[in-house]
Length: 387
Ligand code: NZQ
Ligand code: ZN
Image (cartoon, rainbow, N blue to C red):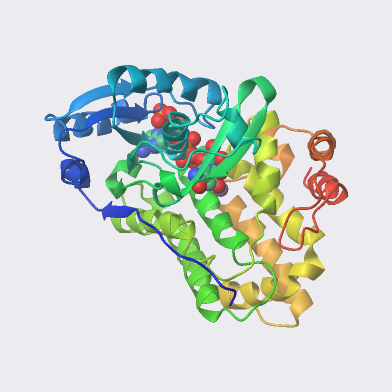
């Protein structure tokens, strides 16, 4: 078990009707900017519930945040915050709304240059303080409700970059599973795949002595596999919705990654595919993951076979179990309706492989993954294999 630091300051308020409790967690007299996406919170009634709860607060709004939120959109909110002297941001929506809000909260305090994109791109240090944030998470997937991460796209340069700052952990996040009933099926399955792959990125690396972290990751994977078909069969299965919502939060709140190696190559490649082709985040993960495993088979065989035995109840030698575990994972994604090949999204995988590997080459990539063994040639091969 490697040395580690663990601290997670986000308070989670979980369960039916919890939106009504928001005022308990807000500073008295807060001037609040409500941030949200396009229409979903107005259609499913969440917008009204939030306003009903916040009648005694001074409210401002910033709507229209798009999936894969853009820098160009986010930056417009900074002026509103300054003008209206907003002192608290309440993000109501999915991971995109939360991530955008985290960026806005940091951008307000950024002074190192005229362009806050400089800290996203690692050219300048980011601010160490941010406007405090609370959230109502409406889409279980990203874990953004209880982590320090944000992912922002810049349309003008077709970049999609991640950033992390302790300053943007939400002060609180409201998780009401009933709010997720209105998700269209493909967003439910996006959430399932994203959660699953978050766990995998922190688990399928190489063996270290970390039996607790392994079992925690395996508990999440087994639970996701068991509950996924239940929410797809019955949209209003509260307990399965609640279980998947809590899985999504736990998959990326820092617990399971403490003291163990991490991969993140699937995400690293995936965000580039979204940046160039606009595919949903989870779709890119479903395509890349098993291709990466085939390409990095020898490096990952030990953990893949552990996964095959413990999660899929497989028996046999390591080689056979590891291969079968890859096939089973692909079949699981397909079984919930998420295509795992570029052809399933109408894209030519060979072209994508060329363009994406070129992008990494331009940036001088050394290597992704727990051994930095996924370089430009490997990326081209992984993607070409997923045509
Ligand atoms: O825009 P609205 O109208 O709100 O609709 C959204 C959007 O169209 C809709 N939606 C959300 N909640 C709903 C709902 N529709 C009906 N009922 C509800 N309850 O769903 C659509 C997708 O929303 P979005 O927020 O984009 O999805 P998701 O939560 O999957 O977030 C994806 C973004 O998060 C980033 C991804 O890269 C991507 O940009 N990630 C953030 C991470 C983090 N902060 O730690 C980690 C992840 O790996 C990921 O990279
Ligand atoms: Zn993800």
